[in-house]
Image 1 (cartoon, rainbow, N blue to C red):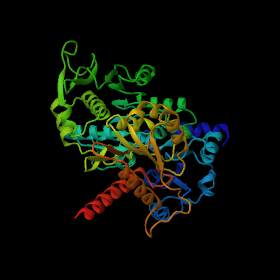
Image 2: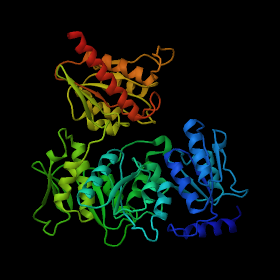
Image 3: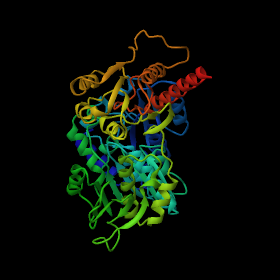
Image 4: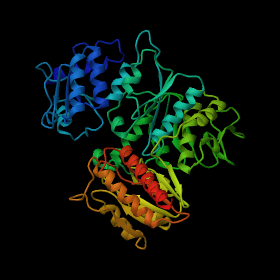
Length: 515
């Protein structure tokens, strides 16, 4: 597009700030046809835009989604790796907008071509924010949550606390319900608790949440962002335009610095959360109680009791206390009463695959922490147990394991490596835990797999059997990979289920042998 055309298109996009704006005829390319891409294309078709969807996948699910999208009015759906590599025309003309799915990095050829042509690129969250206002439907206030770890737990805790207060609220975004599906709910919501990944934040520019938090920051997704500095900069976007309170981690200076540098609305406060005794304008812990010294008039010399730490659950490691404190700060910023914070914690259902006790047998505790997909997440679970037979490894995403191993080497009895290539973790163990026994599952290539059994399941079964041979009374077998799962499993959930199934089958076999 020439400069005049680009300027005209951008001016039109700036006017698109509600569902009732003039979206008709807007030429849009949507990348991806999974849950996010499907919701984007479906929304834009409903708005009357001309939509072309491109996706590298061409499996049965993708083809079924493509057929549905054609039925609802999507102009064209292009499947397969070759189609996803180029920026297509829409109705024979250049696109005016690209809305991308999180899996597409900014360096992807299609997105690079759009950027080079001056075509704006949004994510699904940016689109959702722009269509959230619709005549005749309540407009939800957004509470936004990010961080390297703890996002899902904190987001669902916020949801539970809001619901305990009698508010119509739902967790959405990078969790469960796609944000556009939540926004389009015909009844509307009082609040959306929105989990945002760094991928989603990268494409955001208009969000103005009522309260926001970056829970923590550690090296992750460097392969997608290009550098840790760029990753951190995208995480910091969570605080932009916040209305009432920016919540930061008082135990991590980097998150407080993000708040200091954020451009927020007039009157917005900075409020810290901590697992220790809170200072003024913080939520923290005193003698086993979660307390508020931020959202009370007498905060200089007193604190309001919100809940007992024991209300969070039976197994409450430090990071879970931090998540609860952050969630409490977010909802207190929105006026939720202390009693509803406590009730929300009591009602809260702990999700699977995050420090999830699976079984105890012969004094050995088996714990599934498959959601520990990076070193920072694994550190939280490693700190909770001692001694540990650690099942770890997978797709490293370019991170370094030295600090993780160095900090927890004294807790390790043995390590069993998963992953098609765990050389980075193995190297860190050799350097910083040379006395710890190290075992590996057999290489995937050429190994025997039972009919109907996925390779990841077979690898996990072998890892669990090795762990059982090493663990004794008082030990914890902890599956906290510190790596992504996609080299051997379809997802972290699949990896976690493989661990749970393997443990149960092993213990059933052992019990049968004793009878």
